[in-house]
Length: 412
Ligand SMILES: *[C@@H]1O[C@H](CO)[C@@H](O)[C@H](O)[C@H]1NC(C)=O
Ligand SMILES: *[C@@H]1O[C@H](CO)[C@@H](O)[C@H](O)[C@H]1NC(C)=O
Ligand SMILES: *[C@@H]1O[C@H](CO)[C@@H](O)[C@H](O)[C@H]1NC(C)=O
Ligand SMILES: *[C@@H]1O[C@H](CO)[C@@H](O)[C@H](O)[C@H]1NC(C)=O
Ligand SMILES: *[C@@H]1O[C@H](CO)[C@@H](O)[C@H](O)[C@H]1NC(C)=O
Image: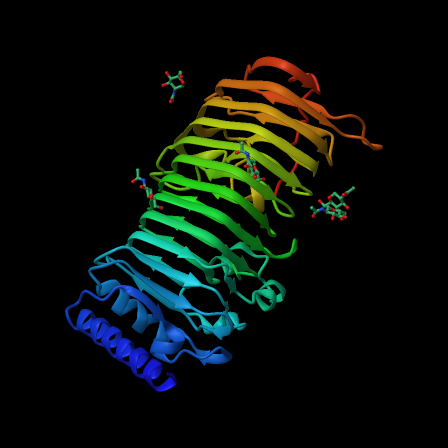
């Protein structure tokens, strides 16, 4: 019985093996590719995963039927990798393990650790962790200076992807932005977890620019900078069910610093929770400088807890004294709504809508705002400048009831 069984099962294995090798030769390929079993990757925290991963990618990307690369459970070391398309069929990278970056910021020649580039029908999944080991970078001298931080590696770059899904993935302690989305069409982040300490500089959770159709859903983002930041050329974005904090909140901009910025058009931020963040929902543009537009932006059903500036439009955004603060912003803001935003503010300025004197904000709506502040600095206030918002529902603090201070307070 046992002999017969073995014979039958080994015949089966032989048949299966020959099927898969025939497919491989024909360029059909596809199926599941395990980087450990097939390409000799080692989960020993020191052998570089780069070559096995790139070899697996090369095979999967050339396949004319859908394929999935698996990085099994375990801890891996990866120096750097850029996974390029276009690929011949849908492709998935399933990361079950933890992948660690070099701790030394000097180990990187380019500002990226892992990049996914020009791929259609891509999925990143598996419940795995990308650990940027950024602690060394946060402490390194001069990293608080803007220019130095700009050259540090971004954990995950998604460049020019079409129809992509990033699901059940964690990015941790990136040395710079945790994830960057550029030139993508139809990309969804779901159950995406970001984790970095409050004091990690320039570690935006997800930065989105020049992309159309980006969804960030049911995700948790704890980091030292913006939770989600939205740059020029972003269209049709939906952010729903995102929990932020610590960090700087959800931010559009800054806009108007560079030449030829594209419009931001159509952003909905809904059903989100912010705790201990420096801002809640924010739009920021630079005084003077370059023209631009930002319209059809809707913030709805937002809970804020201990947030320093829960609702803020700041058209006098000017950190590092990089602008002429007396000039007015040339970025036009229109069709912006804040609806059902409630909770507590860590500072009195709960609502602050400071628009440009030369291009006042148009069609701004405040509906059902209830934000309280308690403490020696007095109750919550609402300040407006160069804007006449349409007001409805509850308003606590009373909309636009407080005077504008002569000097704007600096913001991070
Ligand atoms: C968007 O991408 C997803 C894959 O993430 C795909 O299932 C869906 O069909 C795409 N939508 C459109 C309109 O192409
Ligand atoms: C609101 O967000 C939570 C996650 O924070 C999610 O579970 C829930 O489905 C969302 N609700 C709606 C109506 O989208
Ligand atoms: C907010 O900050 C307080 C005080 O530091 C802390 O106890 C609490 O856990 C923080 N909440 C979150 C969600 O980080
Ligand atoms: C509010 O958040 C700040 C950080 O922004 C934190 O230092 C403080 O402890 C928090 N307070 C409460 C009551 O959670
Ligand atoms: C603002 O909204 C109105 C009404 O929905 C629309 O007609 C107009 O085109 C929008 N403005 C911009 C700049 O998109």
